Length: 415
Ligand SMILES: [Zn+2]
Image 1 (cartoon, rainbow, N blue to C red):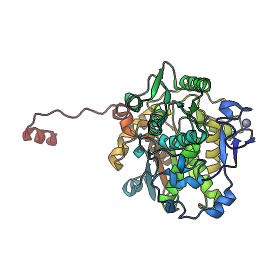
Image 2: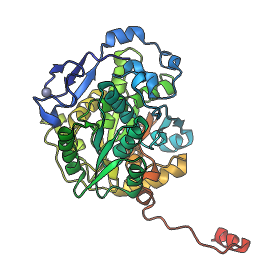
Image 3: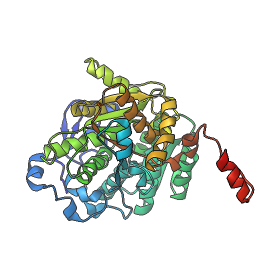
Image 4: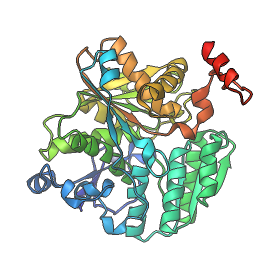
């Protein structure tokens, strides 16, 4: 196990004894004061070799236990991580790239990237002896927590906006979570979850406030490095809502550099919907030397998983992305829907609209020349299309209904 040396506030830099507090820096508050988990990278660098992770023979994110704050002995049976990465040479050629990879995290147990965070957060709850958990979520983090709490055998309390897509709510109910469908926005559900967790003593897994999330989420970067045998792509595209997934991925690459396993981090690019782009705008302010916060804006997009107006991991996301040399790009809903329909046809991966946004972002960055011809890139697919099929199929015609006759098949083929 990695044994953290400190939990450090991302804003004021104050360091806290590991595990001495659950969530955020009391000085800076829940928004600015998100914590980062620090390790002794010098010691880890001496201990880790390119084959260290493979030697664990674990087909889950627990193969990276050396870089995680909790040991595998606290893990639940449900498996997260070690998802496939697909090389897409034909699509790469068409786009003018010399290499393109799709990291398919829809293949996690509850079908989203969030399972990585949950696996570590639930293990932390067990380590800390917490008997119940809670989360606010646009949907995926909630279904993920519900699944892992079922696997752990502990109660799960979920706060989602009442507008969350039905398949996600179905997962929540199936996993036996107590669901509060909040008649309000995600941002209101988030605040209510924080209040209720403090009041009832639940361990809150909500994005950003719980530093375990980023620790789990960084494993996608570690996997990409290992699966590509240390040959990292130059660019990595990640859909961004709350900013937690991209913070995790950027931290993963940065830690690979710190322990001497990688020479440099890829440039990490966050992709936001044009109608929900609070972090992209905060990044622009940061670049001009202005304050990152407050980053509060109205949010409106077809991509429900990234429909966030008041992102919680905004400081980390902006800082980490800047450190990687990357940036942010916004895409319209039309581009998101088109990407969501194009990607499955080309590579056989069915992504929910938010995940397809990352692919739309790649196309946008190629168009404006930010990603040059001949470059290499990887796209993280963070959620399955089965999570929101209506969102994906928007505008596509229903299949043709025919009588059970061969002539009818011929008729359709000739059209
Ligand atoms: Zn602070």
